[in-house]
Image 1 (cartoon, rainbow over the protein chains, first blue to last red):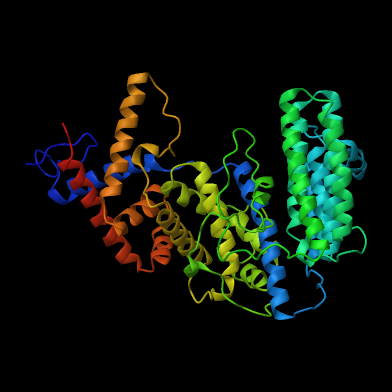
Image 2 (spheres, rainbow over the protein chains, first blue to last red):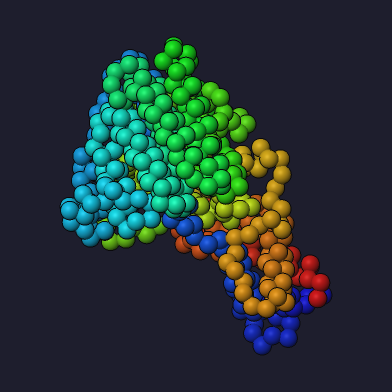
Length: 300
Length: 187
């Protein structure tokens, strides 16, 4: 015995003025309309950027490891298209923000939350895009990490907790990306080397300790966590420079799960908490070889 | 998946560049398809955080597996979908549990009075319960065609069926859904 459901389906032709077929179509359309209420909302831009920030170092690392498999010991190759992309990015950034080169210059002192801050970060993206080697990438990323710390210090002085948190997050992101490159960096040769990384980290630890003393307890806790992560990174760099094994390769097809921090949901820094993985997939226990990447040596 | 006003570069050209190792080209594909992949995952997973986790996995796997991808009439979005679907299966296999219906969110704020909201939540819960009771193919065609609102041709590509087969499958799926509703209607 059919009866009308609360979703407006199921009556079929009983008592309906419509022929059976049309009544059914009406029912099904009604049900489909109900089902559309299950549609998830689109993700925000923040989610898109968060996932990309996690993904980018892994993609770069995968590209590098493929190149190394194909040509053991080969020098790092220049990035094709980077200049063109950089130019497009620069024009877009300038066009979008609608400011002159003077504003770009003025943005150098901007702090998180300032109107010119996105321009400042956009220019950094362009500079990275213009870099042609991993050493160049690492040197720039370390420079950006320095800058984020300078911003953190200035924000702490100004008592701006939000800007401080954003700056620390940017600092962690920059360092996460550097750590993803460590296995292709020269050991002792300039800014973009393991030795250079160690120097920067040593300075960072000093700055972080100094800033920690200037902020209220809740912010000091976040800085304490940043100090801890920087310390681990320093140990990792020392280990590599001392001839220890570099981070393991990414397990096939694995990014792993984001730890659920209570407030600050930046996924980058915590990914290095797993010893030996060096930011390559985070030990989520994924052991599904069937989803692994294809072996395509020499693809680049 | 909109591209704004920029001239849309062909997926195939971007894929070819990404296959050569250009992360930047893959970034354009990511921008193009992230929302779609995320929404698909979100429709199957318990919360936004899980959907973000698996989205990252999907795009990493897709990048790693690009060497295997050959277009030949099979859209890149369909390739991403197959990676996403496998990633969800792996995810559930690892967790050894399925979605708890009551854990699912995914719907916009309902608004209205408390009674109205409770009633709406209850009906949403029943819809999800009904979905979980359907065979996987039925669930999938409803999810893609009805819930995510993808065109039939896209769904056909993704499910590797003809347009006609998708229409038939959808019709059967909705009938099965209606049947479930009738059988479980407490009214």
